[in-house]
Amino acid sequence: MATTLTKVEIHCPECGQTQMESENFISTVCRNCGAYYKSVHAPGRSRRKVKRLKVKKRELACAECGALQEVAEEAQSSTCLACGRHLELGHREILGEHLGNLSLEGELVIWPKGNFGGSRARAARIVLHGRASGFLEAQERLRVEGQAKIRAGASGGILEIKAGASLECGDTLRFSEGQIDGELRCAIARFEGPLKVGPHGRVVAEKISFTELTVESGGQVHAQAETKTPR
Image (cartoon, rainbow, N blue to C red; front, side):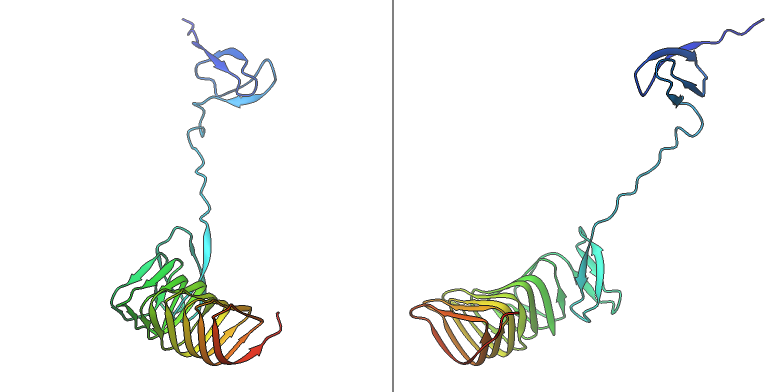
């Protein structure tokens, strides 16, 4: 007795042409456009390829040893491959005493009663109300909003001292540029670019250097000044 094959209706994935094929067909050719395609039940069709997403990374310098390494953009913490130091990648606030180094990709805020007691803190932005015993590195900006003190010096992008605020530093300050609307007292301040002193600004230092100095009416500068040639 002959077996009757059951037919099923299929659609060409290229042109949409409908045609009848055996229900257990493995592959066929479209009678309209000639496209070759397989049955959804053919061996291997159920094995979908998994597309691995490429993890976006960013470069980070360890605040402890300075070693450069790559970390995932979404990571909140990491470990230095060179020295093993734990690195924080988000934001941080210091309300009291903090011992140990910090490396942040976000913002570090040191409040009036706060003191950074480590040897080095690195962050994209630092807002300083209180004290820092260690060195501060603010890649984008160090903004002083209170009566602040830094013992070991600081460096970074822009040094900004708000009106009514003051910064006393016992070591060298190195920044790309400065905006002083409050008071700055330090040994040496070096600016790779311009230094602007507002009408209520006051700078008292042994030595300062800059490419351009602007002092608004009422502002004061008491220091040995050196003009640098722009790079």
